[in-house]
Length: 332
Image 1 (cartoon, helix red, strand yellow):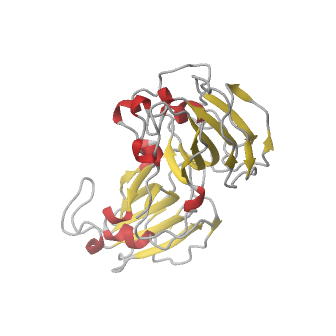
Image 2 (cartoon, rainbow, N blue to C red):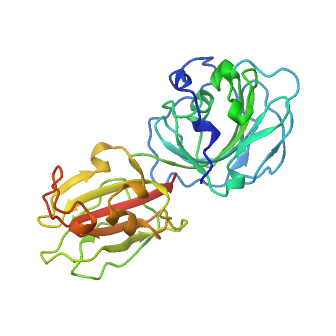
Image 3 (cartoon, rainbow, N blue to C red):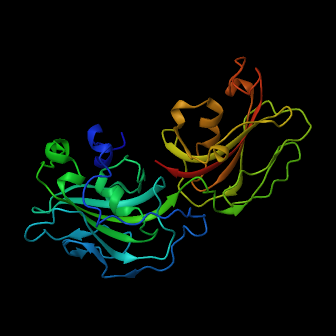
């Protein structure tokens, strides 16, 4: 079973308190949404910027993407959030509501005891930031930072787990937490697949647009009989890891009915990304996306027996063959 990050194990009462605490440590939120091109950070350089308060020294693993070793905090930590950009990139600014892909390590200020880290799991974590999904210190400290940066946070109890702490992780209600966070990527409603375009030569199949500007791609369905079997093919092939049948994905998608090509659903129209477990979707989605690479755009043609069958859905007649364009942005 995939280990659940301690960051998401937040008591419900704290989720609504993300706006509380000192404002002097909060970063200004950017309204600009990163495009796939701008989300790719250029070379990052160390910086001495400190927003407020002290943070412990990083004594090992000092490069972006390396598991850091962090010294024990000295003296009394600040009662306010302390934020230091250890490595600064000129990548896209993180905005509230973005999904962040990050590597991180968390430890206790006065003992240096590590209670959680993603580096040992071998896969970055993905969180939605600035909306109360994670602890308030993360929401306040990471919005406005840039993709490709390493940020160190010292988070007081009031912006962490409060007086009750997080006993499951060994965090007391009086503990200040120290985090080192590598911001690997950011995704939002304007994100698209990114990779190599694959030739679409089969005239019997729909042709999907290859634009990656965050807008819904075109889907041109041929005036031919629909295939009887599942079709799953790359439109854009990314270079990420292959999707497993047990994965939960973050995606953009558009769906049309084969007969007539009418759209019945799309994330682009809502301006919001979708996340789902492959174990909780129609068989055509699960089978069509398993084995495909993260970062890709995939054409899936789903026959009725692997879709909704004889059951009509909103905008989908019974016994419909469905056509989807799916951008696999990240594994959650």
